[in-house]
Length: 275
Length: 245
Ligand SMILES: Nc1ncnc2c1ncn2[C@@H]1O[C@H](COP(=O)(O)OP(=O)(O)OP(=O)(O)O)[C@@H](O)[C@H]1O
Ligand SMILES: [Mg+2]
Image 1 (cartoon, rainbow over the protein chains, first blue to last red):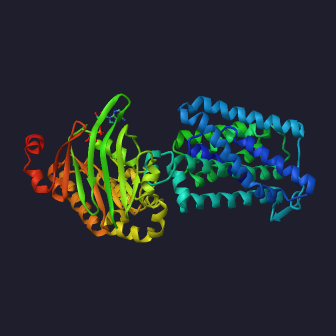
Image 2 (cartoon, rainbow over the protein chains, first blue to last red; image 1 turned 45 degrees about the vertical axis):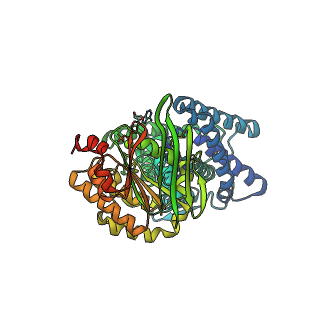
Image 3 (cartoon, helix red, strand yellow; image 1 turned 90 degrees about the vertical axis):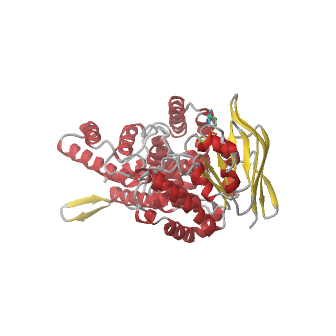
């Protein structure tokens, strides 16, 4: 179940890191930013968190486009993207975190919604709705992104842009515009993922950090840029983590999960599913 | 559909290295014009100037489109393609990790080509049946000949008015070169295209061109008004018939 949430976070990174080769380590910070805006709306007006996450996507889309434009103008265009670009996203992560701390403090925040706290019973298993609802939302979002990437002109151009920018220009597509839009979409998915995160458990401003390693690993394991692979890898990792924490202890879960990822990559370097 | 290309006194190069030294050529509507020359004489550089991939330091490049004259200098490749001039680039430049079908669909990205996508696809599959069979195969896993077909198909998907082809024969077996030339001629007739083709393979190119320019050291050394005139020229004989015959 946790895998669904992982998928929702990793999806944006699949676009940006898997398809555009941009190492956006601030992605989980955008997710947490989404969580807090959803929290604010929920606390103030009682808006449903997931609905709020969806309502905020246009705003995050624009935020993502603006972020890419700054990144492009200051790093990519000057051809020193790798290391200094990383510093840029690291800085961005800090700015988001500090901004959230100044605004909301360091406490954990949570939201209220009718489905939080309810469970459904399927025979012997009980499924908490606060896990099931995010899982379904994540799958719907993944399906949407999958169809967008495979069926639309823009989606195909996004998948092509890292392969050959000049060739893309020769089919009349502007690579910078394509990347800007892809980045915007990725950040828009982060906002929905943020809503899912705060439905699943309480969130504090630096909560994104624990996920950075896991999310990058999922994208790599998913085959760099494959939506289906990302979802599969996220679900597998979610299962491995929950099995570990029930059998051993929750503190072991991340270590075992990483061990599993390394093992899986050693066996299948191209990822779980080939694109 | 009047579309013609007029290039006058173009000077261009890379950094300090001057590659084109005052090149003038023109391609009239409906013509197939060859741009012939051996390695490193500036064929691709001239094509890059037309496509906006290299900016000339002097000279003019204009396209006449239904009585309107458009200046291409200073435009980006996207803008040039949007205006109907489509290139099959040197080295093909396919998207290797996308399928054959997806590469073709990217050809139709151009705004005016989207309305014709189904018709163009049918025409391409008709011209190159192997592409239909291999629709779901990754472009990078195709043979050189198949990739060249795909590169041409992708360009046709853009509904070109003027098609520029840079060395379609490179990397093809001799028997395939002939077939490729015949195919280009067929497609040109079928689509009513205007074609500019760079080639080193003089014999094969001269079979399909209406006339041709020979480029040597960044200058037009000879202009053959017909394929016949081209074959009988001393310079051409010296360059090609002596060398590779
Ligand atoms: N990107 C570049 N930077 C510097 N010099 C270049 C570049 N591209 C081409 N040149 C030089 O410009 C000259 C002309 O190259 P060009 O590619 O136009 O030749 P060509 O006629 O297309 O040859 P070929 O038949 O080998 O493709 C060559 O001397 C080449 O070394
Ligand atoms: Mg060349």
